[in-house]
Length: 443
Image (cartoon, rainbow, N blue to C red; front, side, top):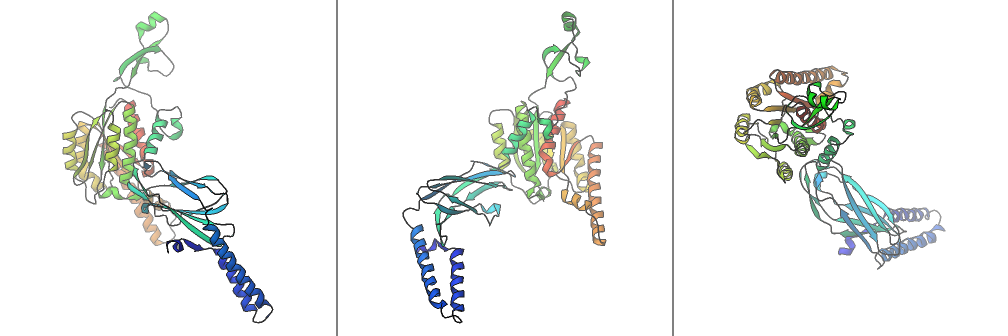
């Protein structure tokens, strides 16, 4: 019974069967075609039996193996390979159906190819997970066909495996490469000149055009008979905290990914670069309750601890408690630090309600409020209105966009740094803000 369940009739057999039926119908008018129809019927079913014996012979020896990375990256193209091997001396037509995780919602996955005798073939496809968690892959189903292609035989290869989807490690490595390479400007990362004097002395070097003339070392200049300048290095071990709002407002999806997951990816990218620049990085998540609290450190394993904490974050469909967040920051952060607050304001009322708390935080620390541009409303405002409903929708969208700009101005007037960005550009804009504040010596 198990073997019968693995047998599937091919389209070619049904096409031949329809030809036989048509000949039988025509034979009512032309009796000479009746014997031909009987002969063709016998031939078709003989070929069917031959094909069945062929694909169930000892020569059918096809293997398959799935290869994936140990960790998948959220909202990135992750490559998966299926390695197939033909251990027989015959050529087969193979269709592969991989049982993908249910989170991908892919119901039409199919790879079709031919496998020559003793050939190994690597099939590659791409998946893009849009939620964190464990993704369970099922079996690999191989549908084998002989050159006759009348019957398919299914071979089930048991390759169940579970792969966790973590915040975007691919994005983290990419931005690390761009930040510390000479081609960073091609990808939108701004390398800014350092200004100010809060840097540790490094060396005395020759003056080049563009250097700050206030840093000229006149004694060394007199000795060497050429302009010499003091060079300083960035201050290190500055504490940086990512404060992430996990409340209802962060559940809005854009291109399949929630604002919370965009924030988690951005926090990982910025944390990695900050640790590479010898700064300390910590984490605080909150909603109606406090989630994770990690003190800013620069120890070995700090990035892995942050990665695990970000992976395990769960959203809560409740309002954020900013008062609780403020007291938690006071307990966790003992020195002046850079705080990246990931949140979302959809109205001036919601911003003004928490503005006194943000002002108090900004007095004690350097606060950067990060919130999001609603790209769906922006697209709506750019559409041409063709009727009264369209005009009304466009006006409401423009009012919403204007309200967001008012929020930005209110925060600037309060002396609070802001990053107002599209969700897709969040990692880049946050990283640029960190490099800007670092170059200005504000942290």
